[in-house]
Image (tube, rainbow, N blue to C red; front, side, top):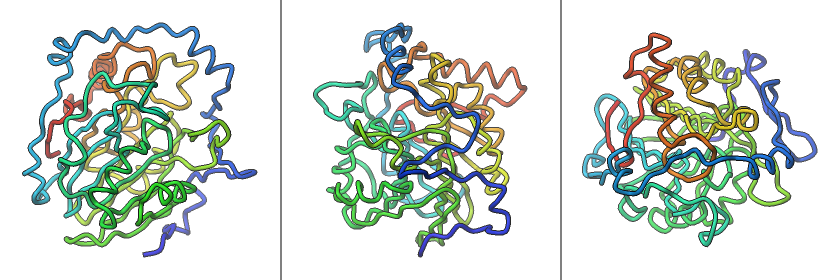
Length: 343
């Protein structure tokens, strides 16, 4: 089915991306564009406070479990089945379909596997071990969210049977990478996927971020969060974002959500990263804005040196923020890599 924007009568209330001279821009005053000088300062002056210990300790503090994929043989009658693969990668199953978000199974999130940002926690499985996957949603083209090696492996395993959903401008890259069924959407546009248990709506929604894969392609493709709306359950994937008013709009238009995956890590130092990455406090703000019944913290505990905070701080800060606001400790949780739960 062709993309549609829906809700045209009230569309003026909802943020749209700015597109000028072939490049996208965020429309909010909470955005501040990263500068080369700011990036250099971040790289040169940052201190590694991550405190990542040896593997034996990590196996206790951040265990990686081996998933039993037999449970994915059928969709749960009630609730959303979730498996955290790591970083922003989740495997979800509900209302008859199975979906991957921002899959990265490679050792490094980098233009090459010879050097660059490396995992300190391994993937709990390989692409080859995955159960049937129907759809993949991509939030943006940064290397820790869109990985060529993983895309190639998924195409090799699932081929034409895999449906990809990407923000505007990314379809060409996906097609050149071998993806055969690609739906490209802008914010508030939606596509109906014919699931076996009924239609599922995939809605491209805003996030406050940016895009880049080469030295000269800054913001030539859009970035996004995603709503997946089944006939019984609603899921939201934030992807990667700074805090902005868009999440109140998403909650108003499509909430409440049964489950959301919200980034909680890679936020320090705040003077450089706050426009593009939420910290745990703002992650809980997004949870509230989305009217999410349960949220899972992602975008932490997987890759080295994306930022400067202690490797366990995101998990602890989320707990502190929930307690501070009088919210249930089960409202916003973190999970182990490889753990399968129904929420």
